[in-house]
Image (cartoon, rainbow over all chains, first blue to last red; front, side, top):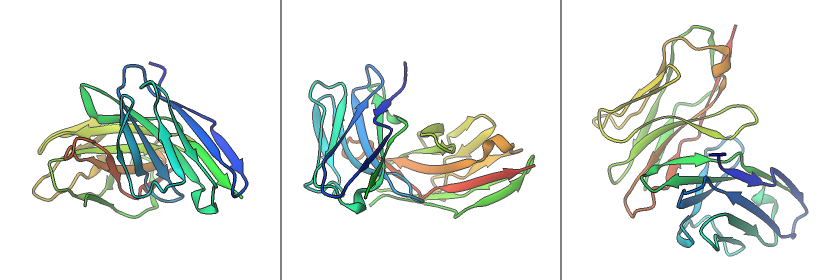
Length: 114
Length: 114
């Protein structure tokens, strides 16, 4: 396994712009999770997919946020009309069917909204 | 809802000192418990886990025991090294509802000096 990968690793954007992040999970991992981590805090759950189905969304995921996993493999997280408060590290994790409680994290995408 | 409380950092120790990082949790179901570590500039790495009461997770000289009676999962290491300097996160995964999403503590920064 090559591990969970995320792209881009860093993104700087201006307030009001749209951004999209990509996550490639470990192959054969059917669950994929998105978390957000702000400075000095632990990661907070945003949403998760089982295969291509989005099964749960946190209240943190406002209408400006949308996530997809169209073929049950990679996932994208889009933020529309970015705000300065969206600045954070966005983390992706995946888990294997026979060990669903153990999640493996990618390196994250650090977003800075100016 | 679920929550995790960790001792605040930063914790500064001399090399070869004994380490304890306290973690307590609140959960409605029967969670699995985890310690993740985040080295400077890197993503979250799973350090150890325990999936039921009285289980002991261990890895790289670190240990933690799942104590249901005290709702605790304290991290310990007998002799720390400079290379252990990192931020340590305690987390729980509650299978209630089927999602296994992780709830994290705020993290404890450990600095080990020569």
